[in-house]
Image 1 (cartoon, rainbow, N blue to C red):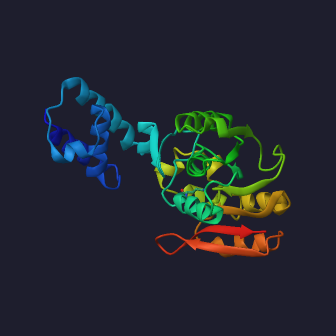
Image 2: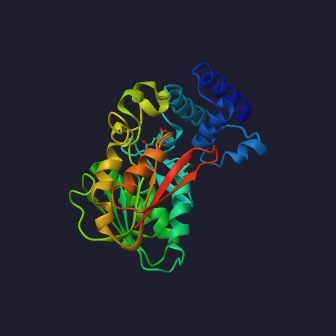
Length: 279
Ligand code: GLN
């Protein structure tokens, strides 16, 4: 069978299931089954053997249920990294790269020996991306989920920063000792009542622990800000991702929690996406 025929078949099934960009997704699934880059299927229309066709249909059947492509592939690109992701970790989102950019801009001198803590590290995406860019930094990735921490440890090793990354279980600050130059987090921030209305790809497959921010979505920011200012070194910063409409409330919470200066960084849609607070 030709690749184009399988892509067309996949596109029909994904369209019927209400998956966005069904043609692109069908091509990605076939590329995964073939073990090639999706680009190869744009430029070429190879013949696909029966076993690969069956493998494609098995992957397709999973995607039709709205299981995220990243879970099916077991990987997701973030920053310069190719990260392992599982159902225990939030799939890293492109908007979280704004947090990385903001943190790097604050760090200034990339050779500084910074100490970083990443709360709700999940796949380790934020901490690992920062350690890759800051060669003398070291850091702690914290999560309440042990399965997530195992994924993060593997990702740190694969990215070559295993020696500078530590991972440990803690609910926010409860088991975290010491002071830091940089506190970062993409915490759960979706108000509990909004979870039911999320896209099924997110709602039915991603860990609610990483999504549910309590009644008003701001629970994690309260837990973080309660002690953050007292655990930052001179000139340090706390930098967090926030949901739509949360930037002002979070900035004001941080100003009431010992951070005299805050800054809001918008995403490409103009939504305040990252809040930075300085001591
Ligand atoms: N950005 C994620 C979403 O919209 C939410 C991640 C989070 O709660 N930190 O699905």
